[in-house]
Image (cartoon, rainbow, N blue to C red; front, side, top):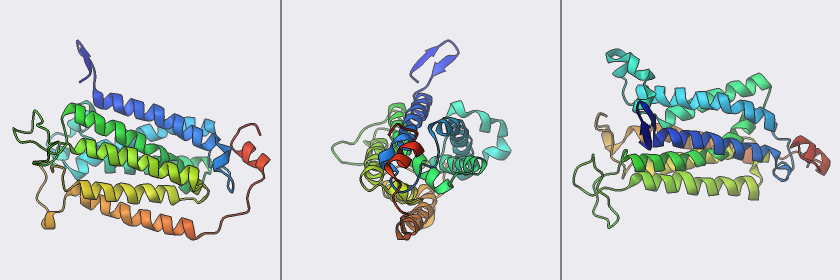
Amino acid sequence: MLVQIGPFAIRWYALAYVATILLGWRYAAGLVKNARLWAYRAPPATGEQIDDLILWLTLGVIVGGRLGHVIFYTPSMIWTNPVEILETWKGGMSFHGGAIGVLVAGFAFARTKNINPLSLGDVIVAAEPIGGFLVRIANFVNGELWGRPTTVPWGMVFPDAGPEPRHPSQLYEAALEGIVMFLLLRWATHNRKWLNRPGVIMGLFLAGYGLIRISLENVREPDSYMPHFPLGLTMGMMLSAPMVVAGAVLIWRGLRQPLPAPLPATAQAEAAHEPS
């Protein structure tokens, strides 16, 4: 917890989500307004539409993240204490559930506004690593979602995890899911200009996150209330494997399709709502 004044509390986790929404919003708006990134296709949305989209995505990530945690990790809550499902301030959010919630919200928004959902998805996921970094740092500060016991020199003792040094897996995830993924997607959007290939940026995110999460599950301590799955699998691994497959399909599909003729410079600037 960051600050508490009487019944009012500001929690690190909530602060990370608020910062993610604000920074992600501005980054996504900057992408659609940058004419240099849209040499072959017009941006899928205007800056004003991105402003409207943020409310949809915020609801998607909160509802999806909470329901994902309940369905994937604590389904017994549904019949033992269903009211607790609404008590999000107690913690318990699933990345995979949040991702599904964002997918549904983004697709619904695209259908409502007659926008290409793959192109819109590319813009959305390009900003996601900002949240990946901030939320994992909040996990570390809160001393939750720690790693497995280890003898490496940088092992840490977490207050609620016993006396054994453990992998600071939250920092591994912040570095890989946040910094590395951001740089990879930034390279794809700004150097390769793959925003002009609908679905490729989204595919890179899905496959990249899935591979990172699967690898880090080997050093991340499974939740104590989860059953033991065969072959050393974890719920995180099983939920991430389809992401890798779906991401590979999107990359293959997007890269094999020919690009249209380049847009005139004036058309690029007008499409991005910037002065030429």
